[in-house]
Length: 231
Image 1 (cartoon, rainbow, N blue to C red):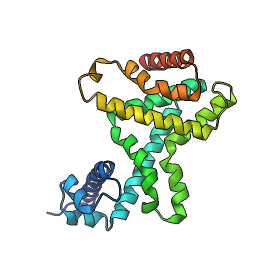
Image 2 (cartoon, rainbow, N blue to C red):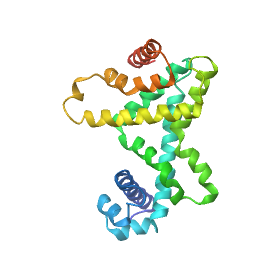
Image 3 (cartoon, rainbow, N blue to C red):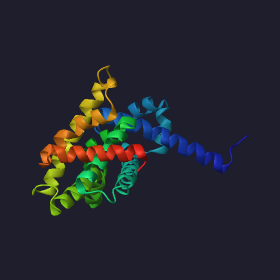
């Protein structure tokens, strides 16, 4: 007995999701050039022919994966920034960084993807839309740039190049988050609270901006107090 069109559509979407999820896992491990359809099929536990049924080429597959991840990243960033009203720029940076920190704890592949994506987008997309894609692949650093620019203009952050400052903040944050993630795989990290762990991750980020410790520490306390109270 054949399935009805609605059931067929559900099966199709389920298979595509399965393939994209497998592709993301392989991509994070091996990058674009280290990924092929055989590996994706094995990761997804599907026949290679079925992967090719949905995606004719590796480039087509990665095009859809990247666009989906860019969409998810934009929604995540927008959700974080929508909760920043009423906070000063240092508090905004702290809240945004904490949101990414917690997301990495629950969904580490998102940050891992956005670290790799800018280096591989040129091989996946055409020259006509690479500028647009570059912006989409850089959503988190771009958001940090906007907040830092506002902080400089309002006197919360010492004068500097906002884009370069955001590069530094993002690079240090990512490196420390990854170090923390490896730490909590063992027993040492399990005894620390989220606040203590997050403080270790971001302290050098704010020091690099030239923000005094008592200022960013107070902002950290406020972010955690607001989180606990549901604010």
